Length: 334
Image (tube, rainbow, N blue to C red):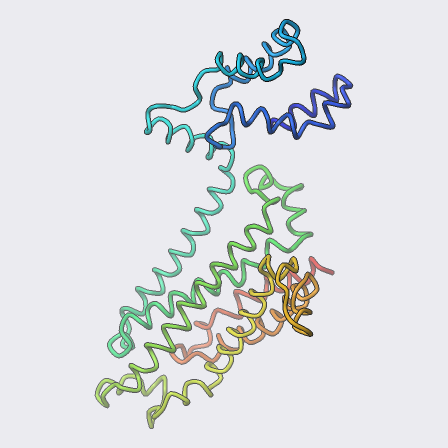
C-alpha cells in the first residue's frame, strides 16, 4: 500500500476531509523526506514512525509558523536511510522488488524459458538435417525464430480475451498467482517477442539462406532437390514470388504498420503529421490498424502450410497452434 493510500484511508476514517483532499501532496512530502534515493519505498519504518508520532507534539511547542524549523528538527532525528553495505543494499532492493512483483517475475520467467526451449529445440533439429550443410546456422536461426513466432502468435491473443481473463481471475485459483490485471502489459511484451521472432526468421532467410542456396554447387544442391525442385532456383526472385515469399513479405509490412500505429506516440496522437496523414494518429488509427491482424493470421496459416523444408502435413503445426486461440478470441469479443 502506498503512502498516499495510507493517508487517504486514515483521513477518511477520521473524517478529515481537508487532509484527504491533499493526500497526494502529503505523500509526496513524506517520500521526499524518507526516500531521498528515490527507491520507491521507505527502507526504515522507524523513520516513518518518528515523522508521524513526533510531528504533532513538536508542532504544538514550536508553533505553526515555524514549519521549516520543525522539518529540520525531525530530519535531525531520522536515521540515515542509505544502507552502507552495497551487497546488503542490493539484497534489500531485490527482496523488496520480488515481494512486490513475484507474480510478474515468475510469469515472465516461464514465458522466456518457453521461448528459449522452443528456439533451442528447433535449432538443434535443423542442425542435424542435410539442409544445414548448404545453409548453415542461418536456417537453424530462421527455424528457431519461426517456432517462437508460432507460439507467441497464439499466445498474444489470450491477454486480450476479456471474458476468458475475467473467468480465470475470478473463478480459478490462477487469480492468486497470475497477475491478470497486467494483461495488456503482457500483451505488449509478447508483441516484442513476435517482433524478435519475425526479425530472426525473415532476416536469416532473406540475407543468408536464399543467397547461400543460389550459390551452392550442384553437388551441394543435390539433397535440396526434394525441397526446391529440379531444375534449381536460378535467381532471387524465385523465392520472393512463391507463396512462402510473398505471404511472408506482406505479413511483415502489415505487422510493421500495426505495431507502429500502436506505439504511444501515434495511439495518443502525440505525433503531428502534415495534411491528410494526420488521420494516421490517434486511437481510431490504432484500433482499425489492429484489425489488419485478421489478414495477418490468414496469411500466417497459409505461409506455414506451404513450407519449403517440411512436406509432410502433420509437421506443419501453424494451423493447429493458432485456430484454437483465434476461436477463443472471437468468442471473447462477441
